[in-house]
Image (cartoon, rainbow, N blue to C red; front, side):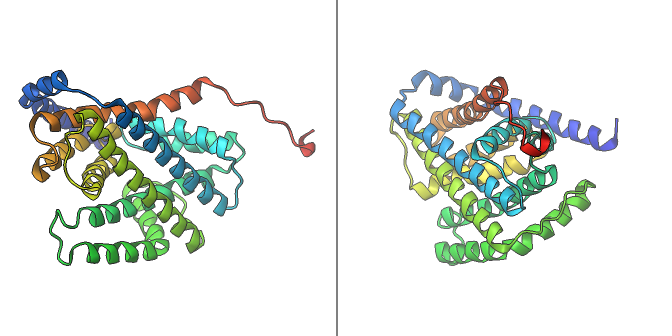
Length: 308
C-alpha cells in the first residue's frame, strides 16, 4: 500500500468520524425535521425537472467540446456515456469517472484522448464558472467590496481568460497528480461556450435547490434566488474538489448546514432536513439514470462499407 493510499484512507476515516459526530450532535433536529415534514410535491417534482435539465445542458456542453476536438458524437451516445461514467464520482479518487468515460467513448467510436480531454476541460471550466457564479450570487451575503458589480466584472474577466487558464490548470494537474492528461488545443470559442454551458447549469442547479427547499419545507423558506444559488454552489464546489470524499459526501453536507444556519435561510430542524434530503435528492437523480443506461444495452452499430 502506497503512502498516498494510506493518507487518502486516513482522510476518509477522519471525514467519516467527523460526519458521524456532526450527525450525532444534531440527531434530535433530524428526527424532529423528518417527523414534521409536510412536503409540496409539485415543487419537488419541478426541482427534479430542473436538475435533469441542468444535466442535459452539461451533456451538450461536453459533446460540443468533443466535437471541437475534431470528433463526432451523437447526443444519445453522449447522454449514455455521461450518465454511466458519472457513477464513478462515488468511488474515492474521482478518476474512475474519467477512466469510464474514455472506455465508453472508445466503444462509441470516439478517441479516448478527445473524450477524456474534453471532459477534463469541462470539469475545470465548471469549477471556474461555479466559483464565479458563487461570487455573483452571494456577493451581498459575503459583503464583498463593491458588491455584485465587482463580482460580475470578476466573472466576466474569468470567462474571458478561460482559454488561457484551462491549459495552465491542466499542466498544474499533471504535475500534482503525476498523470499525463493531454493539454487541450481548442479554439477559445469552444472554451467560452463551455463557460456559458456550465454557468447555465449552475444557475439551474441553484433554482432547483430553491424549489426543492420550498417543497420540502412546505413553503417555509426565505431569501432570494441568488441566496439559494450561492448556498448550493459553494458547498457543492467544496465537495467536488475534495478528492478523498466520494461524491463529496460529508464535505458538502457540513458546509451546506453551516451556510444555511449562518445566512438564516434555514435554521434548526429545517436546516437538518434540507441537508439530509438534498443529498438523497441529488444522489437518486444521478444514480438512477446511470443504472438504467447500464441495464439497457445500446443498439448494435452498423458496420461502415469500408469495414465490410
